[in-house]
Image 1 (cartoon, helix red, strand yellow):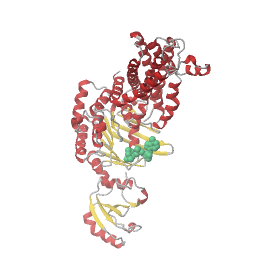
Image 2 (cartoon, rainbow over the protein chains, first blue to last red; image 1 turned 135 degrees about the vertical axis):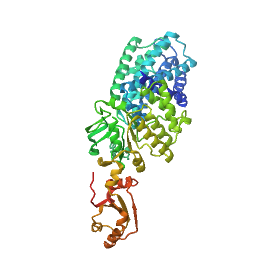
Image 3 (tube, helix red, strand yellow; image 1 turned 180 degrees about the vertical axis):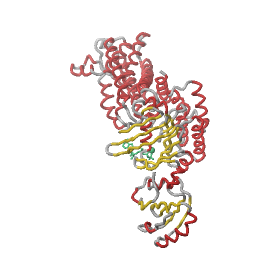
Image 4 (cartoon, rainbow over the protein chains, first blue to last red; image 1 turned 30 degrees about the horizontal axis):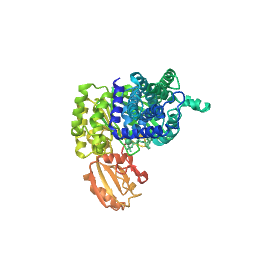
Length: 249
Length: 327
Ligand SMILES: Nc1ncnc2c1ncn2[C@@H]1O[C@H](COP(=O)(O)OP(=O)(O)OP(=O)(O)O)[C@@H](O)[C@H]1O
Ligand SMILES: [Mg+2]
């Protein structure tokens, strides 16, 4: 526990210290919320509920914040390797699994923090307060998304040696995960072939779960979301722990 | 029990053999120096012993623990200062220490006391709350050394710990390392390019070249092995003529680029004879000097490279002959 806490604490300290990065990474979500949300409000009609597009979009943008922050927190290991700090943790008499879990929880915590900031922005823009229970449900899904994707970031970071592969990860992993997830559009309106593709995207279940918590309606049963996302988180933690154990400096 | 036992350790990177079947032992409480030119395999050896890399073959024990199989036992026993920086620059000096202390499960007050004490030792107590990214190279190095000592390891690996430190700090550190070694019986393995450092600190020194140990003994014995005295003759045209200076009291002759060393005992008595012998062989002398061999000479003798041009190609190296026994 000590070790997990130690690694977690480091992540939190580094995150809180990078004020400009926190503010900087709020720019994009804010931009999307305001311009897409209000810009497309009159054009897009959400089936069944008929709610405003900006209300529909907000949970998606919250998920985006959590997704990006958590994957980057996992990829932090690549930087640690490059700047030599990874050696300090790997040479210590602690199990790799503990290090990996510490990094995962640290990354998830910062991701949830980032998601919460976006959520607050969303409330300012027009999202209605969903009540304590709704908020708790959304928070639960944010935690799962944070854990799963930090662990995914760690898995990737354990396999690649330097930042050369970074652009590749962005283009072929992070953007597709986000784009396919139904964060920006209702999946029920999609052609069947495309819709089944979104069903393979684990983030879809996170977005829908968070959306259920925040707006009270979703296109996938929240229980299904919970089960799928939990299973995915467990799988990612196991993959991350396995790959990180084999990582070398 | 030995602090470190290395048996036929080999490390290959593809076709290249970085560490070539080396064996040695380090006693408990010993300060052991690993000297060698760049690329000799010092850091590779240390990272294998510290469980940071796998050996291709061979085995090693550190503080009684197998490096392959009981990694945790090894890791608990060792402290290490890597050749390359391994600090978190976004944390303060204190936080880097604290992180380390917590990882090694040193509890509350002990952790704080030791951190305080060590930061003071390396002269960083007044900067302890500043971010490491604002530190100079020397300050970072000092912090890393303090950190490596925090958990009072049984065996301490120092890979060029004093590189880039000013003479004063180096002296401080030597004293501290000696104290640790005496008070707590910590065994130390140190690699360095400063021969005076190795000479002063090390009980024994291993010289490693191209992955092999070419000499291993106390600094005293190593110096003796190349002759009690050393006469350095600077000359441009000695090539092919050295074999003619055949005198029974000469123990070794080693030639380098533009000069050669004659190893012998009682150089003062033989000086006239040397000059005569040189004159007879028509070697032009630009200068002659007599001195006791230093570890630098030993290094030169065994690797053919002075520590300064250790990186340079070894083609200028030309061993004509030597009469001395090698270890
Ligand atoms: N990961 C690696 N892949 C390939 N070759 C390597 C690797 N690590 C080290 N080597 C090679 O192994 C040899 C020994 O390297 P090592 O770092 O052990 O030398 P060293 O004695 O510590 O040198 P220096 O005094 O410069 O620190 C070098 O030729 C180096 O290029
Ligand atoms: Mg080295």
